[in-house]
Length: 114
Length: 109
Image 1 (cartoon, rainbow over the protein chains, first blue to last red):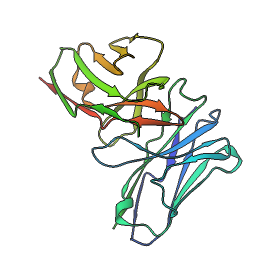
Image 2: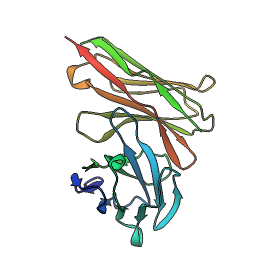
Image 3: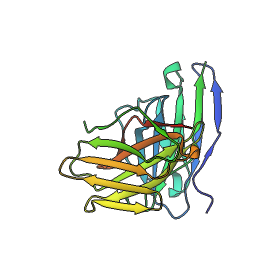
Image 4: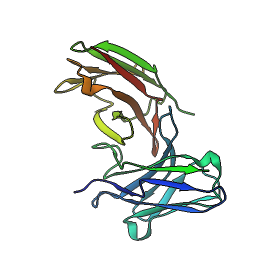
């Protein structure tokens, strides 16, 4: 068990470009979450999957954001037409059952939009 | 919407106990968590407590839960320099975790 893996660790992109991040959860975990964290704040919920089904999506998530989890394994988060306000740490977490044993977080992908 | 609040800073002397406090609003929260985040690092789960418990101890960590007042605390005994970090309180609310803004623990020599 190597934990939750996120790639890339850092991404610098120009405003208007599209970016995609990947998350590989702990293999036996069926729930996968995406959060966003800005400096000095706690994480904000973006979306979550149970297996391959995307069950909830935050109102914070504009239609420029899309997430997928094909086959219920890894997940991708895509941001289209990036804006400077998208600069943040994007965190992925997984858990086996809701709440129990806690959520295991990856190290995050830090996005900087210039 | 639901909210979690914590003070932003706590300063303690090395060797003393640290007590970090948190309040939450969702009375239906089943699990409450404490996470630690060191500079440039991800979120590390320290401990969690189920809502039908009022105390949980794990080595140097003690979690106290007052469900009536919706108050959670984390006590770190014998605080060391390696405990310097930001500590986040989080409460589960429906399908997500609601997070506090984090308490930065500063250790004085």
